[in-house]
Image (cartoon, rainbow, N blue to C red; front, side, top):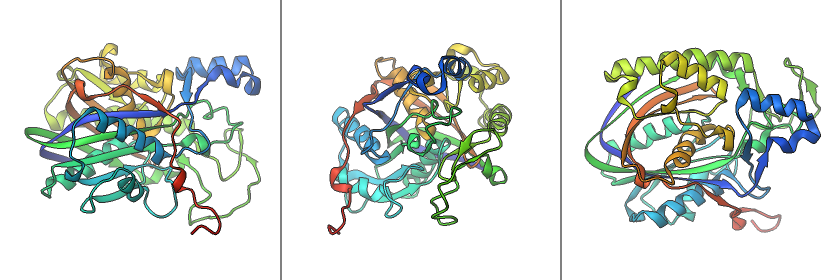
Length: 362
């Protein structure tokens, strides 16, 4: 069992950024028709999202979130001992985007930097990885960055997901503090890896044809487009996730009533309602942001926290969190968060112009 307990490490601050490019579901009516868009919003709860500008990357959005956080909370960057960047939309195939971000943020040479290639479970896995690095070292801080630009990997005529995916970046600062406990449960099931997949572009099949074909759900795609088996993912989400949350509650000897809020991956409103019902959790405790940001993958938990608490100063709150999705991969954790250090979501048009290579310049 992948159950972890780490002492004396806390989440110090959370910051998020989205592209300054708001897109509404209504704007797709010219492509899919008014009725299809209306049904999509009714079933998913999504009304709008933010999509990356052509030049923007996941690294750019995470960088903006990190700089925003550093402006608001006094932190000695030289004491940050690790940078973990979670994404499935890296800036380059090589090198790791974490190394680029270490340079851009001015972090010390002694800062270990690495990428984690996970999606919707990525925040939970990234949190556990960074905390584990801190627990076995003398570092005072660790920085978790999460970023996705999944909207760039979707067939623009795929009505099942083109109106669903939003892009965003997040920065989460970990700090040592005595008396704090971080408890996390992680799981994965590679037997179901084909449930959400983008086949082309990796080293299994680098340059297949761009020809489109009709998939099992009746939608036309190429191998360069994300495919999601909606029935399989839905079944996984409403069955495995509530059961794992219940397992976590048993392991931690807690109950739903012990938590002030629940922050789940923002898949769609129907899945969230089913998870809430199966956990017998009060609806008012379940935080929702997908109506305004869409499904942002691994970003959705920190984004939901910033959306809800960013404009409030509500003291310390105990939050139960679960991320789940592509892989298949999922996890559950909890933390007491100081809402004063959870900052409002910012919008950005910025991108790293020096990071684009031109022929003859390298």
